[in-house]
Amino acid sequence: MNPSRLTFRGAMLCAVALAVVGGLSACGNPLKNGAPRTEYFVLRDLASSPAPSSTPATASAGSSVAAAPALATGTSRVLMIAAGPTPTLFDSERMVFSPDGVSRAYYHFANWSERPARSLVQLSEARLAQDPAWKSVVSTVAGARGDLLLTLKIDDLTHDDSKQPGTVRVAVTAELLDWRQRRLMQRRAFERSVSVEARNAAGAAAAANRAVTLVLDDLGAWARETAAGVQK
Image 1 (tube, rainbow, N blue to C red):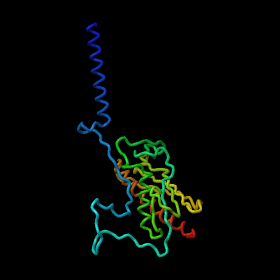
Image 2 (cartoon, rainbow, N blue to C red):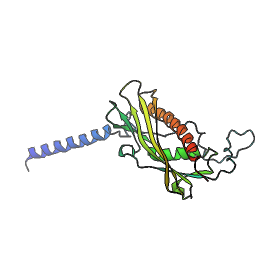
Image 3 (cartoon, helix red, strand yellow):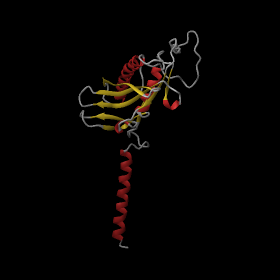
Image 4 (cartoon, rainbow, N blue to C red):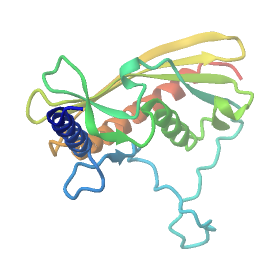
């Protein structure tokens, strides 16, 4: 084989190898100092008490662990909560932002710890379980026989960075059904927008937590009032 061809082939292989290494670095190679790293944020209800530690604790006099509120006398309704159909854009752990208020994009290195639709069901279950208007509150995957079904669909969860300060908009559509009669009682849309204090993913996550907390405030009051008209 022609020596010049061997030299050219070797140079090409070397160039390809360098391109591959460069591409890995650009994607956030964890072995390279200073490379971007993927961060994960937990969607939280700021009105709820902190999650319990892995070590069980027994509440006693003077304990800082708050006791669960007593159920109202005669309360017998079981509320089930499920996630409704989620738009494709938000059916992902990746955080969404808008650079111009119109288009949408994903953060490259910022994710939610799990899909927001699942987090919303869990947060709603935990929040509404503290309300004595319900005998119990469960997710439908628990297999309980419920009286009412609350479905929650996330319509928007976006960091809008088109104007300063930016905002995070959370929009949720809720449907409350009389599960025994298979009848839709009421449908309502909830929306909250909260200013972002820091122009980054951490600031967006903090604003999302505040917005979700406000939505849960509205959701709990609405579900209680709507269910009040249903005979036991």
